Length: 241
Image (cartoon, rainbow, N blue to C red):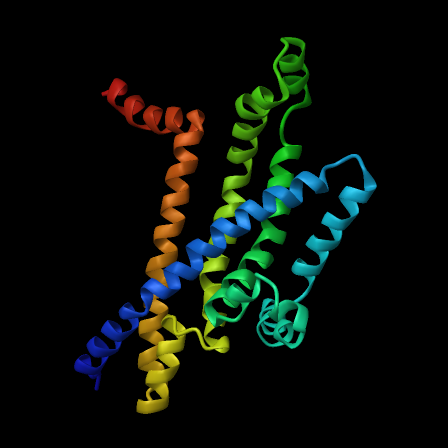
């Protein structure tokens, strides 16, 4: 028999922890995106002493489990006096700060490769034509390179954003009381694992749906051919009627 009262109460308690999950997601997403731009700018450099450290960073954070990275940042960095005496300790002494930093560092490694793939999709002929017209490097970046890169990278980046939403659940293992952390607390008191995790899964499912639809809308707005195709699907049958 389904206990609707328990499910409703559990859902309300989990929704109360949703701002923490959203804070983890948006903070790590923004920080990771900024960091990935710096990493990819080094990764595509012609100079090996800039490119190789970026390659090493990507290899490290893509090749090791996020959980281990989070544990090393949360449990490991505090053992060094130099870290405890630095300005970074104001962030690293907090479980929430450690979770955001570890999520951002990890997603930056994946996002850097996604952006690099988008950069490789930029037609060299368009870049050469823009330079022949006398465009400055910043104008070339703003008018040609960045729009094409963004359009090419968005589909893969939407997948990375979904994975980041699900990865925020690991923050509960470093005592951040997000949706998953609160779900574990409820299970410890009620011993009703199935119902509690079903409510948590529903919240993550809705959250990921909204993220996917938001990025799909952005991709639609940035790709004129998608709008033309959608309008053609509507106008075509009407013109044949």
